Length: 116
Image (cartoon, rainbow, N blue to C red; front, side, top):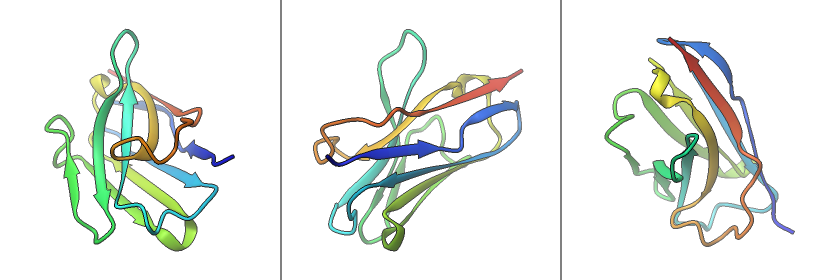
């Protein structure tokens, strides 16, 4: 079964940086858009950033200018570079396609906690 494995989360102070990785167990090269999502406690999962097969990107307004998404199709991996982190960025971060229909089973996510 296709798996998504997220990693790179942790505890960081406000203003700090983290780099998340997500590796799929099958090729992502033909997936038009891959994305990062996050879910904070008591809130619904939200789309954070998307990257398209030709390199175009989209970001939620709340992370524009601070986060950067990239992909390496040769490694079946996408990344999320997060800078200038804020306490409101605290959440479990997940990856999937956008829309999240290619991988029916979500990964375990990676916890990001930003202290003030």
